[in-house]
Image 1 (cartoon, rainbow, N blue to C red):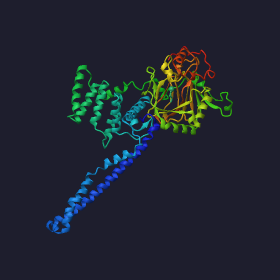
Image 2: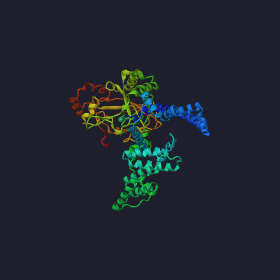
Image 3: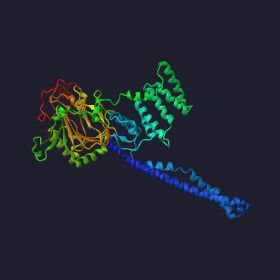
Image 4: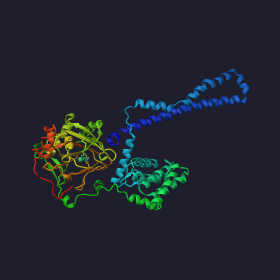
Length: 532
Ligand SMILES: O=C(O)CCC(=O)C(=O)O
Ligand SMILES: [Fe+2]
């Protein structure tokens, strides 16, 4: 699976280069073969012409007689071999034998990439035809899609039973087909998918009109003939209105309920905290009381006050970022999520990225970063020595979630080692051209990734209870590549009823240590007016 991390998609360009080479080799070999065949046929024609002038005189010459026999025996055998020669098969077998290190995307990748595009389309409210023009928010990023490219997007949506996007992309394919000189797809095929998706979206009248169009193009189209009867029956049975064409298309688009989730408006940068809240936010230098930081204090920006969300600027150097990326690349695995009911780690559509874990002892740069986390947060890193490196793929995202385990859930606690995740520190290791913000739907806060910066917030109240206001999401990456690093599991140590139960069932309780002097426990509770 390659589409879930951009770092892996890059490798596909090597594959593409190898494919270009093999196709070129095939053409050269085929051309040489043709050249030889042309020479033979010219020689045959030449001799034949000479012979036909006077056949008898020609064969009376013993050399001519010999050559005639030769041409029709060994020469002909050579020619037959040239005609029969399967250059393609040889080249392809050889290609696969010698390029075992090349990565090939699978059909799941194709489907994943197509779904990602439709997700981006919804989240960022991108108009289908601009996207097909290779434009994202007015910036031209890619080449134009052909009718066949749009058709394939529609077909992938159809495979996922996503009729709305099937409809949008098949409409676009049909539009584009009208303008294509060398048509890349059959119109009847587009119309078939269009008819089916409009029917599934509840517009049987339009489905019938589209099916009639198929029959104008291919009067013997068997499926269309059957569907026509079915749709006509359906119209009489349900007393459905006849098609209104254009108006009905508008209705289909307006009735779409996808893409209207509130957090997506935050992803688009349409919402921000009130001016009253923003006016209170400050930037400052801080040494966190650490003498070591006196001459090089941290640059801290407040992104929100209650709960506090901080941005630390310039806390990861370019050379550290390069080391971390290099170490993580070969180890990427699809990020999974804990199933609270079964306790198993699962791969889910709502979290699309790849992760790798790096240990402090692997490289000085990692140890330096881990030490910096301790200096920044004043939390002990004893229980959080691993760094999780994340790279998001096409449309990669993580839908709204809490970073703390839901109270009362023994499985969730088990996965955390010991105790709940007290805080999250998120290093951004790349700028993201468009999209990819970390958003907090309950706070109207959006943090835009900035290379070398880090976001920090407490997930738990100091009582140990989860702070529901910290619910957050990673918005889909619209353009660019998003890399981030999270020290894993900053562990809280407040002993409450849940953790006591956990102690009793776990043998890892020795890890439950470290933060009690850094962030003392108290009885602070979530504000009563807030219910998530
Ligand atoms: O990458 C982001 O913006 C957020 C990631 C996140 O929420 C997580 O990994 O828990
Ligand atoms: Fe998170």
